[in-house]
Length: 415
Image (cartoon, rainbow, N blue to C red; front, side, top):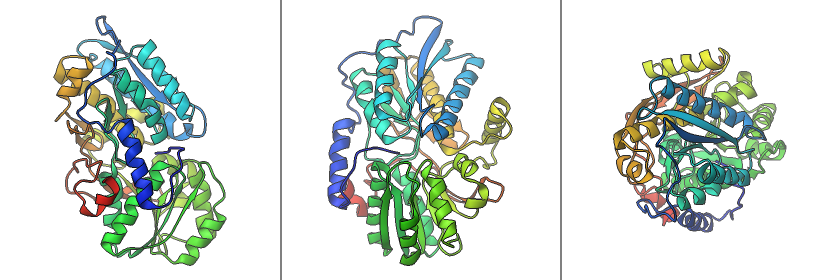
């Protein structure tokens, strides 16, 4: 997800820079040394927990629904008796779509409000801005969004997809469909640039030609030049890591140029049900997305989740992967506290490995070494009903591999 830091287009230099960045910001899985001890007070009948989401600014359209899911998860836990017999008191903060504000609000929640855990963060920039507060304060952040990988911290639990659970399955699917060339497009920040560096390494190892690569500033609405380049390049498909409000302009220009899913399909990393709803189904019908969850999954857990969400927030609302993984993050924290029989951070860190919940997306299980979770990869296609329908799923949940150690072709990326 977004980070304002610019990186060189050279893949080797880019990824070396990212490796240095993550090494300094939380690549220390298993290192439980912290500068201070959490000030959370869990001795009374209530326990404070925090949420940080952008409720204003350019990312509010994507993050408000995530906050809704966190609120619902906390309310459901309280209704079922709380955690270790204690009711949760949720303190919500607005990150205002700015990493610096996320850092400020994280400090407030950890150091002043003394919460037992925080749920939130959306962009990679927001996560990296908050990370020092959680490590130095020995506090816990449950980060529920898919991201570029190459990070692991003892004070962060990552319930969204890492690279081998979203990007690589998307590439495997395109390859299985006969795609031999790609055009890469993204917003200009760390998630798209890192994602596309991984795509290029995969492509080189799998005989896929990269026809072009372009980036636009966050919230850009000018895609005429890029779409013209894409149209003339003649790639088999587009690998799309454009995010937020820019997606509307991107797909509008794509359609105006006469491109279609039959001629040149778009595989998107950041188009979920909420984005389809805001952009319009007619604009996106037939396009592909790679996620771990869709509203249309027909399982008892998801049917109950969707029904509860709509009953609470309105029949016209939709559920999506980012909000579902945030909802699952709250459930994972509760399950880990239950297993540890403690709200203390060291006990939670020690107990986390192997903790599972039956989330709406399916069973997710925490990896105790890297604090990511197992996830089922799913490729979906946008229907004319405005929903995304699964067309492929991995046979079983995929173990998280944030540093891509299991992929020989990625050795140059992670060092």
